[in-house]
Image (cartoon, rainbow, N blue to C red):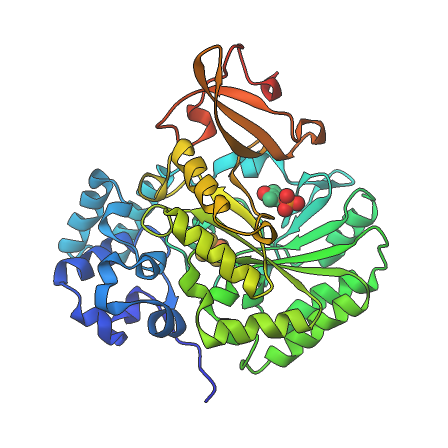
Length: 427
Ligand SMILES: *Cc1c(COP(=O)(O)O)cnc(C)c1O
Ligand code: SF4
């Protein structure tokens, strides 16, 4: 039988029989919080990933279903009261937008800093932050098979983004890259580019292959499809074409890197995902894995070591553990930097060298990706030791630096430099 994609949103939630079994108050919370954050899940997530016997404590339920605590009480009450009053859609949307604007919708200076120029014209849908890698946001790939409740790109999905990241303009991308010989990697990202039909994706990939750019070595595709809709690679009508397209890239001697987003080992357990991983690897592509560290979903070292072990067993390469960004429901999903380092360290100690390709925990900040190396002591005083894994200025990478120890800090902006006026990269 070929599984057919069925999306669930707030409008058709009642089609999920298990939802009707949940307490009324929880169903109401879903309606309230789902007005603010984008909500979407699907039949694979509902039937294959979630443990409905313990839904309210289930990490895979929390992965796509919003809950009350994702809003601070004041915001929750604002939205709950208009819904109780049966306010009009327009009123609800107005309140939703007001709340959203208070949730730091554009973290890490994405708007101001990273849009490149071609002969003086800004290139929409392209970001060039780190020397070797250009990000491309194909316009038809700016949604996902389901939405993560912690998504840092959530403003794109609720239409309040003025980032205008999405682009159809593969020609501009090629022109830009051809003028930048330092670029070896193009990362197609979104949303999820694999939401696109293969023939649409192929227009981008074929153009890149045909452009004959010898310095372009790697095409990366950032995707959550292995986790949210593995049938994209197995039984969907254009699944075979997708694998053929992947094989074409590797046959042209370009490295194809599938940057797969997995948050929990259960996402690696179904027959469908295992079949999909096998088929992708047979095309010559490599799968590298990454995830943020999330309270209520994966904030235990055992979860991470299990995830990295299984990934390595299946031939995937563990790549990044991220710190939850300072946007949206960070107050709910965030883990302190110190705790993040402890979780990373304990998980890392439990896996073989082959899984120690993973780096983290890492914060994607305006100056770059900052790894927490750990807690140290300088002259009897505790410090946080950090380094850049990626930086706006390549010279900053792997230069250790210190911050005053702060057990509660969840992001760089909460940290103070140790022994100096400012961090070295601020001067
Ligand atoms: C993470 C990231 C990249 C890729 O960095 P790698 O360390 O090469 O994986 C590129 N651009 C941006 C904006 C990123 O955040
Ligand atoms: S897959 Fe990525 S872009 Fe899509 S909802 Fe999840 S975090 Fe957001």
